[in-house]
Length: 68
Image 1 (cartoon, rainbow, N blue to C red):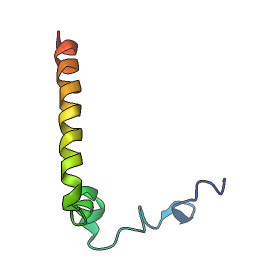
Image 2: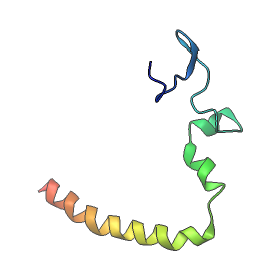
Image 3: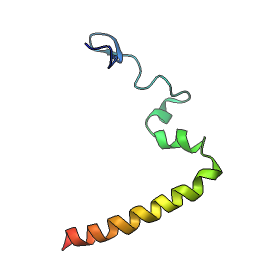
Image 4: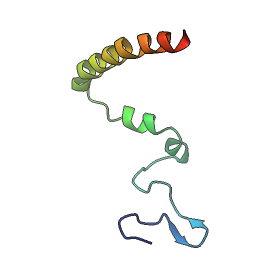
């Protein structure tokens, strides 16, 4: 196996961790957005809203066209 893609297992068939960087309860691994939400900065909000509006302006017409 290449060193560029390290294995997540310590042996054949033994997965140790899905993502060892995530700390806290086990359920936080299954809902990664909550981990990010805890570290969200208020200064990002303006840019995220603009990105959401741009994506909506692009994807709504595409969805309508696809439905036709």
